[in-house]
Amino acid sequence: MIVGQYQTAEKQTITAENISSHGKTKLKLLSFKPAHYTRQLSFNERAFLTGAELSPPLANQIVCEGTGRLDYAHWLEAVATASEANPGSRLILKGILGTCRWVDSGSTPPVTEVIGSRWDGYCSEHAPFLESPLNPKVGPTCEVLLIPGDTPRVVFRTMHAAMDGRGTLTWVEDVFRALRGERCIGSSSRLTDTDLARSIQKNFRKPYPTEHIPPTGKADMKESGFVWRRVSVNARPHHLLAQTAILAAQEAWRHSDGIVRFGIPVDMRPRKRGLASTANLTFAIYIEIKKDSTPEQIADDIKLQIEQKREGMLSKGDDLIRHVPLWLMKKTGAKIIHDRHKNGIYSISGFISNFGRMDLSAYQAAGFTTTGIFAIPPANEYAPFFLVLMGHEDTVELILTLPRKLATNDRLDSVMDHIVKNIK
Picture 1 (cartoon, one colour):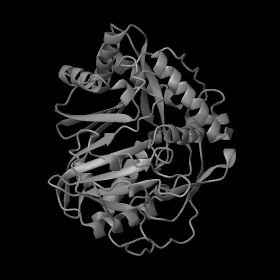
Picture 2: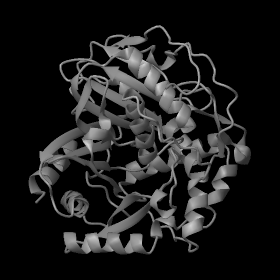
Picture 3: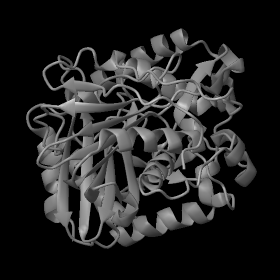
Picture 4: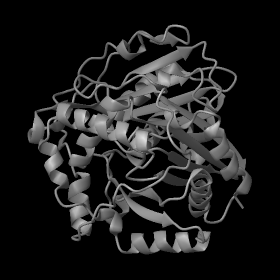
């Protein structure tokens, strides 16, 4: 059953050779009934908006690859159904400064077919469609790309200011339910990350000094943009996140001595029973890696911090960011980023996000069978390193994104090779 009414649009395609118009591709969909879903823009989401200006597209990108066919009409219908059930996928930004709110536009996220792609799914090369920015003011803030070929792929792209990774998966899983003709679970919570954090943790966090070295050494200031690489490992490693943190730290110390600390994103949804939301409800805990750290020690530290609900610790004054003009945040952020790249010292060594092991049965329908799933890190220049871990069956996917400034001279490959070869 289709929830809401829409008009099936003429099939939309882009080609690998004609990407420039992709950001302007729109589907001619009828508006839904006047939407009522809205939520306040949090300070964290405002920071993500700034990040998207400084380091576009700052998007979550979940990729399902597999076998079978991609029926455009079925996907278009399923995305409309799932998006009606999850209005957080149809948001646009309204208001100014502290009055800013996300509002349901009622417009279904675009579904676009990419024809003639040479992208192999293992690196950023030949994938300019993954660099297209999403627009918070007029939309869309979410979209779906269908990429037919010998290995068909579906890419779900969501603006990080509107959703986090788990929120994206909430929407994605409902799209597959709709494809199978099942009822969507849906989400309509208006809870913000700040609200949820304050409900579980009253203590404040003292920000760390800007004192951390990255796993790659200093920046090549002539470069710009980002590059990423994916490696699939046939293994079920123990303490995978802790191992990768230690191995990445070893790469950092190969370049220079210094403090290595990684942010570990933690989904706060389990803190509130029955919470279903596509919003940004993830904050981080932080782990320092010492030269004598063991995977067991790091894993114990992570466990203890989660038991203490430390992901909910805000810094004093965080909420004031909601009232700072974006142009000023962008100007200030650009100077901070330039200085950190120039000096080689950062507020954090990077982020490592572990999605855990995914059940592939949730991502098959309508003649398409997912055999692999991975997430491309929503990198920004503020963090010099972003590694995502995602497993399925007996495979672990490792996807690392770096600013090009930090990836020259084969440094991205060096870091990834060291991690992959030494995981036990």
